Image 1 (spheres, rainbow, N blue to C red):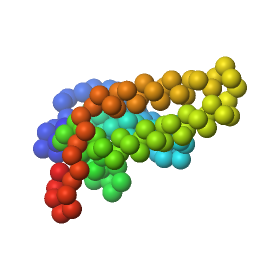
Image 2 (spheres, helix red, strand yellow; image 1 turned 45 degrees about the vertical axis):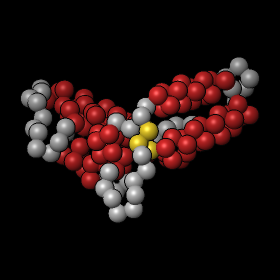
Image 3 (cartoon, rainbow, N blue to C red; image 1 turned 45 degrees about the horizontal axis):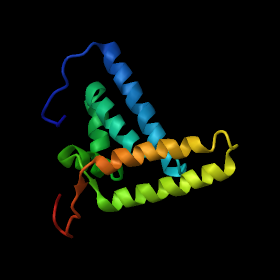
Image 4 (cartoon, rainbow, N blue to C red; image 1 turned 60 degrees about the vertical axis):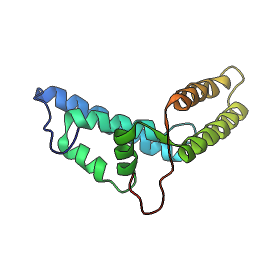
Length: 138
């Protein structure tokens, strides 16, 4: 949703639910910055989706955010992930899965790796955005 497109009329209780879901998704994404097995980007994108349905103010804030805004704007513009981002995500998921396998009991050690494998396959199937040349806008 762009700034010029107003939110469709929704009952107040729906907007509150969308806003709450967006805040929860954003909080989870922020926690994912510090926890290796919890991804950040999908939760930030989910927060943007929820905010677009619940709060123009929060959506605008997220789009203008110094760290989160570029990833949301990039996703909305191209529905693609830069190759470097994919490589970093795969590396972190592999390291996090190995770490979890080492620390968790044997009957649970496979679970993080299975979840990360599903996310990696999903990410693999997404288009890869070409690298942006310095000074060029995507």
